[in-house]
Length: 380
Image (cartoon, rainbow, N blue to C red; front, side, top):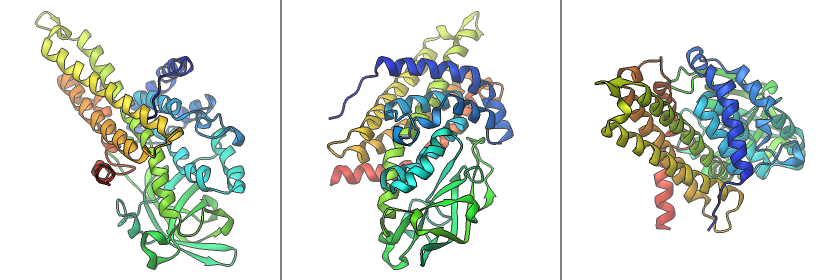
């Protein structure tokens, strides 16, 4: 069984990330949420810290950090601003298929730009009628000589309109169900259009929208893997990305714990700080215990991304994403309760943590789907 303990370097990295986020990211978080615009200033600050390079191999301009270190980055960013955190997650998600199944030519052409922050990517799997049911997708890719012609609509796409590169799944054989899906790397300038952008409850600084493909011509060399391998690539990608969604959820939960603790110490009622009231102490203790337990499971799942000799990643990754996101939601609700009426206002960040936490239970596979995955693995 894969085990881990944080190294001194990882602990030092957390301290550096914590200070960076408190100085640069957290002070802008409320405005990012209010404006619902892509946080370019925060993104450029992250690029200056070389954060996009963490998840890219050294051979392609990245720093090749292990996945526990990447989780620490995600966690600390989410503690400050979940929207900014998502800007660091999405390009890595879009590039996992390239790193795992792409040709050397594709790796050399696209990964260095992502590592430097000059290029951003999106992952385009879902459609209006194909969310959890991936095999129901209708987007088509028709071979035409040395190219494919892609037609269809992708929905719920993070970074829609911001990304210049889109990893798109489409049917090359509509009669073959999930075995007829293939994967393509598509540049925006080849004809990718952005449709409706959503007005969202949370992570409002990260655009989510519709991607329209109207006979977009894609070189055959930009197919990732073999024809018909797309479903396998999509599921394998999500196995490797779900633990970092768990890390985002842990960061949101930790932010809620920290703000609730600070409020309990500063708020006076009945002539003394409310931190002295045992009922509130117990609530805070439960929040902290749940967050730490979720963090440990997330780190174990992230360690498995790097080293999984027993094939446990699908199971443990689903558990980590599910437990961490449920924890983030519950902890954020309790933080609002601890702050009382103030927690319900935008004067304090806990209401934002509550809104941001909700999406972690939904994207990259709803928690109901995670439970299906877990049960199937347990039952063989």
